[in-house]
Length: 564
Image 1 (spheres, rainbow, N blue to C red):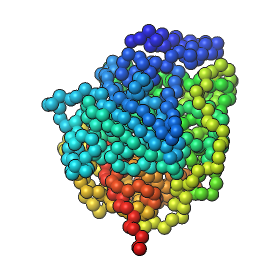
Image 2: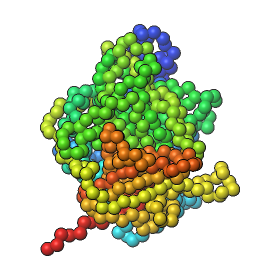
Image 3: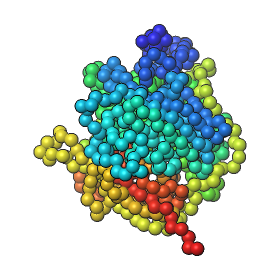
Image 4: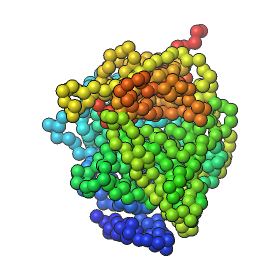
């Protein structure tokens, strides 16, 4: 461990035990100026902050001249508890930077897989992943193993093509290098997206290991000017296995969580620290990059829930996509974030008189077969007139709102209606503790585990607008996500969504079935009117479920040529 890490750890321990306003101010100042070794060179791969550290902003990499070009090395190590850590690291040693692009920019990433090659005796990945099909269908390596990686650009409406945002057959094995070159659509909504590995069968382990980062499409101030000029803070929530040697006591969660790589372990749940000026307004961009943990965000001042003024969900500015004008702001006191979901909102910090200001996640009832996601703190806000500010502020308004990608979708006549459902079955009905098979199935088809060699479960045509009802027939929550496109929420359990909830998402929760009565469901409108064609996937974004089979392929065929 470096001297810098030792000094930071010692300071954190001292600050966690200090009392009184003067001590709090001193500690906040010390932690703010101490080097943020976790983001850069620290002598080890995939470094992490100490428990109780002040939040450090992920480093930013900006596009220049319409191109963002960088090289990533994918690395790993074991932490002191024996859990595997993973990260995308730049050539300068920075892990998980925030990539900032504009609509229409090109993103060019050279990815080197620096993982050690698995032994020849190692078992390959999930069945079916080693069925490469034709040479044209193989992208990168043709055979998967437990060191295979790739990158998914989650939420972006980019093509599902090799060297772009294709995950069904893209495999980069240990020692190999692979080039990504994709263009952000010119009408991509400005907001928060993210990147992470997406190799079926091992995606949960990679994401829980920390291999993820934010991707921001700039320009949100032109859609909702309320954020212009505000300090902006990127907060990434990740989950990871509870160490086998964790301190005893409490009611352990299914998974521990961290905030910007500051661990918040059970049972103590020591929160991270967010410094702010008293009563300051900031723009927070929050990503739930957890593999499995559902988050219900709340900000409390002395036990009173505060209003969060939401301006974007899942990368789409709220209320902005009907082509009638700028975006609207949604006041909310808690924000449900499924794994992979994002929320961007304006926060007013606590006044100097507030004694306890806390960002937390509320308990989630995930069902009889679900994980335990308890109420726990994420961060404590420390106010000081000298508090360190986030390094970036939102630019001033520079033009009119951009073109509306989803204009007219709400009033469009659907060209097809489909019903899909989540279900799960024990592999051995006589062994309740044994493994479970997870399915997502089109009603009327046979439930099957995901296999990239299977034909698409759904075939549609570019230009289509489809209404999908997605049911949950399992006794635990599932989180529906589709690649390449967004959808409009229409109904929950057959009841039309209130106007404030009728937003555009790429991930949405379908609550558990209690065992009796009707199946919980959501109805969403799928938008295939854009340029995206080809094969891509939809799945549960609880990645343990996806790895165990809960994924399927959709094929969008090109629109027929107009008659001559």
